[in-house]
Picture 1 (spheres, rainbow, N blue to C red):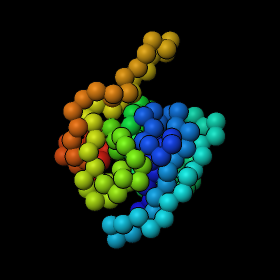
Picture 2: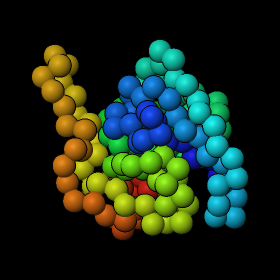
Picture 3: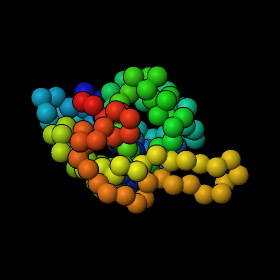
Length: 140
């Protein structure tokens, strides 16, 4: 399985659409066998989904993400796990071991005029798989 994590300074970046890079981990038999950094350049939300699909990523782990990006990733058959935070490698390892703790409120809802947004900075955590991570997105 190939897992991408939104990344800045080896920490989970909290907004999918603005992530400067992805930490990409390849796993086998429940452990990480390789990792690399994938820069995003000037990519926007839709281009990021295409970039991950081109990289043959199976799952994306991020902090916050909007509905349009979730839909684009689902169309590319990429599992979306939102509400994560912390060191990207530790997060990927927890995901592989089914012990990843995430916030339930991770969906970004942006307004057209820049009136602010909620990227899930508050909310109680849960273990990935316990509540379905936003409409069943986190079933692995």
